[in-house]
Every structure is written in structure tokens, then in C-alpha cells.
Length: 359
Image 1 (tube, rainbow, N blue to C red):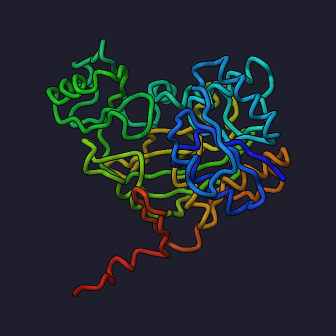
Image 2 (cartoon, rainbow, N blue to C red):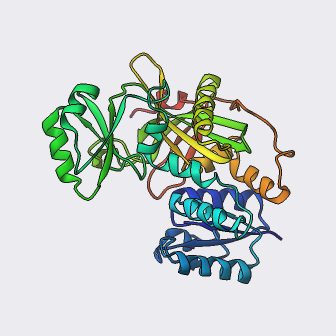
Image 3 (cartoon, helix red, strand yellow):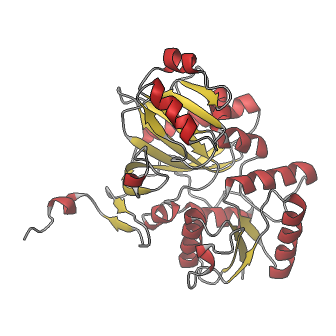
């Protein structure tokens, strides 16, 4: 029986992965860890077999002592590491020791650092078709004139690190920009970019040593608790559509290879793109996550199961047993509904919305 460690199991994405693995591999033992003693994943019946409260990875010595103790005590075979700061920590560990504490499937530290920081990603993609016009700003250097002249209003502001909704807002004019810096004084660094009016798209991709093995895309149409967010955009999608968009996959693949060529590294692990379309329908990358997307579990339910693929790769040490599906196509025009405290719902198409019964 395999034993797998899932880190950050209080978060929605690790919980989704654990649920998917529980369904696919019922005899696997799942050990969950999280720095938050109130992590909801600890207390969901049947989600994990055992759990531990972990030190934060910023406490380097204590964190690694803890990880090694858990690996030894629970006889961990491999780990799924999800929080981005922990992915960086595991990458640092590898660079220093030339090995991981146990087998894991994550990007190298150099790529992870560049993608995690939206300002660094913007630097890597500056002057290309891949991103909207973007500049870096901070509380100490707001660059008011540069924002006005180079980006113009309306524009989009967001924190350089954190989930998609953190510090995000459509700025209408210079006064709203100044106000937002004041309100978000605890966030030091931002990016300001041109405001994109088109669809919000996402693409989840599995790479192995530079090769794109498979990818699938979706549209994020509406958001959980959007009314309470000033931007009306949050990090979680409440209504989305699964897409068969080969052009989108090609665009994302070209983007990540462009970045990897600059860094002289190979794409590896699960990478998740967030994109917006401009007024002409052109794709523009807004974020590249170094981990699974939050909807990875519901994608697995309609045939695109990167959680199970990750386990196969960790078990076998290669991708020979993984079906190569560079452009994965869903067999139906599936849609999904998500909300707080309820299980996601998958429907075969949108026709049900037009068949709602009236009194």
C-alpha cells in the first residue's frame, strides 16, 4: 500500500486532490499536513487517514525536521506539494542537497520563483505578445505618471504574489489608483496592466522534463462571492465551461517555453495558466501557477485526471504509462457549478438553464 503526503491540505486545491485520489486509489494511505491547526481538511471525514500540524516552511530548520520525521514515521512513498511557498522551499532543499526528501513532481526552483512572482513573470515576458502591457509599482514607487502614460485608464492592478483576487481592481482614474494604494497599504508590490475586456480562460498542463504531455482548458465565467470583492473577481470560479481549445494550449505552451529558454530550464510538473482575452479576442497571460488549479478535482471527473497521472509518474519514475493528450478534448460541452460549503456540480451542457421551471 502506497502512502502519500499532501501538504497544505486545508486549502481547496489539496482537498480536491485528496478527494480525487481517494476515489481513484481507495487503498492508498493519505497523510495531510498544514500549518493551520484549524485546517478544514483535517476534519473532513475520510479525506485523510492521519494529519499533522506543520511548522511554516519559513521556519526552515523546524520545517525540515518535521518533514523528515513524518516521512520516517508514516513511511511516506511520495508527496504532493501544493502551497507555492512550500514548492519554493522544496526546490531550495533540492538545490542544496541534490535530492528531495521523498519523490515529488514539481517545477525547479528557478522556474517556480519566476512564475510565482507576477512582476518577475512580467519581466520575463516583456515586449512579447503573451502578456498585456504591464509595469511594476510599489507603495514607495507608485510611478503615477508612468501608469497614466504607458498603461492608461482604465487599467488593472493586482498584488505581485498571492491568489488571482488579491489586491485586484479595475482602476478608473489616477485618484482611484491613489486610493487603492492607501487602502492596501499592507501589500508592498503590485503590477498594473492594461484592462482586458474578454473572457477569463484557464489551462492546466502537465510537463515532464520539457515535454508537454497533456493539457485541458476551461472558461471561468462567474466567481464565488464576487459581490464582496471590490474587483468582482475572486480566486474561485462558481460557474465555468470546459473547453476544447487547441489554439489556447499552443499559445500557453509557446509562452512557457519562451520563459524556460530565458532561464535555461525545462518545464516540469503541473503548471496552470490564467488568461484574459483583449477586445480583439487575443489571449493574454495574467498568471501562471506552479501547481494544480482549484478545479483539478472536477476536471478529473470528466476525464482529465492530473492527480492520478501524478501518482503514476511518481510510482514509475517516467511518463511511458501516461496517455499523451497535448490537446485533451472533453467528450461533451460540460459546465460546472461551485459554491461555498457544497460539492461541485457537473452538468453535460447549459441547456438546463433554459429549461428552468416557472411557477
